[in-house]
Length: 258
Ligand code: 8X3
Image 1: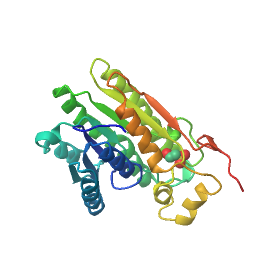
Image 2: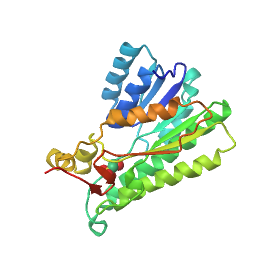
Image 3: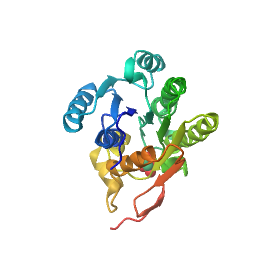
Image 4: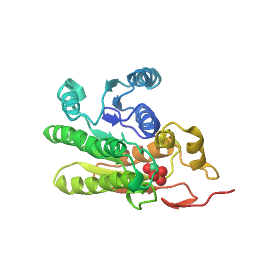
């Protein structure tokens, strides 16, 4: 079992899905956690449960990663051991809509771009300097997507945000190449979480249809991989991992049993 005792991990979008599964996995490995999300009631519940189950320290904090000033303030206001963030998991992200680009809703594009791209940038910009100041063996783990490798119809903007995550990961890896900081981009394919319900603006029926006839990944599958990357010896940098259900070859090539 991986042991990350004495490590501190900050997870964005930690109240559900892959973020919540990462919180579970890292608490199970003995790490202390800073859990960020907008749903504070859920975060507080999760924090209490993880502390009770694993005896780790958990700090639940309200954060909308789109709010640049709030990201900076949150990091500035961390004190003592909470400033020593060893691992940043940039997980907050979403897809909205599956319309053709020419019919898309620009307000929804803003939400995707601001969350998936700019939110990731703001957190990274705030936390990597802290890692450097303290000469930590830091690790930035971004949750990208197979959507960042191949675009698919109706997904242009979401796919572009995840392509941005790939290139931000690659660029950061170059910018910290002379530092003890690792950068990993995890690129999952179909994972059944609240992702599709959000994409279809609350329609469970449309979301269920996405995963009908295929066994999708679950959030814990991704958390296992994130934990594996974080638990590798400090000289080992897992740059990129692409993971799909066995019947998904790439974003759009899926075999479904009818
Ligand atoms: C989620 C994967 O294929 O639903 O990022 O876009 S996909």
